[in-house]
Length: 399
Ligand SMILES: Cc1ncc(COP(=O)(O)O)c(C=O)c1O
Image 1 (spheres, rainbow, N blue to C red):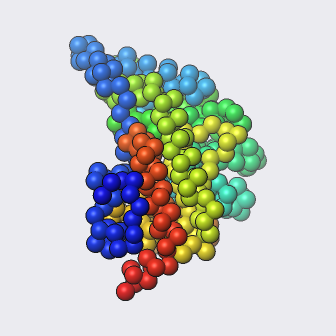
Image 2 (image 1 turned 135 degrees about the vertical axis):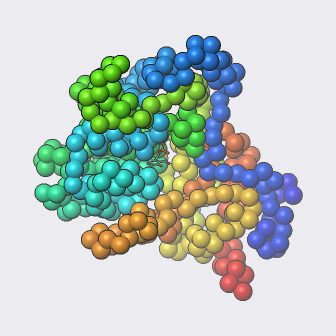
């Protein structure tokens, strides 16, 4: 069936029709920019026989991103998970940390894995980011840090969180895994709080295969994170602290630099896709396409819709219908960290109403260079059809 053809109910793949898309569409399919440039950089690294340990490409990626993110120090690491751990260690965080439950499990695991106790808090209904009022309610003597997450590339309420962190004398760490290129008050995220951590994982707007960046304007903190990243080696033999191996390698840096060079194209493409989704999916009862704040920059990598109360079809039913059509939409972040097995034993965290709601209603749609605008239009029309015919689809699914 051509992708631009309108389906009838009987033609939906879940009811026996052929899937609309022959090639599976994914959320977070890697963007691969200039292959020749990547290969040329990798060849240069191989010619140098310098593949890791602060090679020239790692130095270059750090300089390029420090410039791009308007921040003094940028430290390239193996992944954001390690970056979060190095940050907390470098800041000597102990005891408990307050983090939003509505985030990727990696934020929580990073902290728990280094022995910190997690105090989960709720997020704001408007921007899905950590709720400063709820943070304040949970601050006690035992809390050693606040971890905010700039979800969907939208900045947290940074000023309010900073004010809280200052008042209670605790560090503020930002998980900026989603937020490369995004701004707060027209300044790129990266220099806010004590430290920020970006992910360059394959599924992110800019990828370095696996990878991460730790950014800060604090000279002493940056020095310490550099040491911790490489076993605490001060020089050839001298080890001054208990470090770990979190060094980025040269091939990853080659990929990351090249993809950074293609960022404007990625961003602009994603923005066009979001306009298509938004236009087709607005004005339907119970459905809300989450819009980035147009007063700020965003990488537009996350196309998120809410299928909530009032919608004729439930989020999970729509998910099933779309997967059958070869569209691997995602239900991030279901069920919320506080309900995941390693954490849900804790009674202390209580009920988090916004997290519960979002984890039951959000759906992420594919973006990135895999999607051309025609595919986005075809997918939007299909979703629109499912939303409009939701009651009938639900009753057939139950039959
Ligand atoms: C919000 C958030 N934090 C942390 C991470 C972990 O990033 P990495 O895979 O680079 O360790 C991710 C990865 O998807 C994420 O989405």
